Length: 133
Image (cartoon, rainbow, N blue to C red; front, top):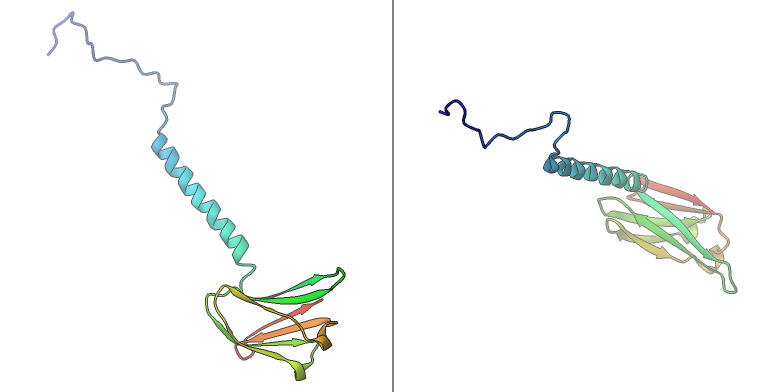
């Protein structure tokens, strides 16, 4: 116990109007916010592209080429893929399977170079995509 008249050397003045910052808590919330932003971006980018999609690539230079890319953006492998140009079911192209998150490129036959519509069917008709040119 201190006697009367002694100085307290351990005493420090803390201002009440100035806030002290907890840098660990700020860093933790910044990391949580970063994870939330990444999750939102992943959902906005991958959900609209999920499923069976078709893309057409054309070059209109001196030698014109056409190729069709069939994407499988599912978590499962898809089987029995059928590709038909302009409802010409006599000349359909059949592929065995496409692995998850992969694609195949297809070039149409000479007779089908001026197609207007592509129909892709997979998994015995469960998935179907129609793309117009």
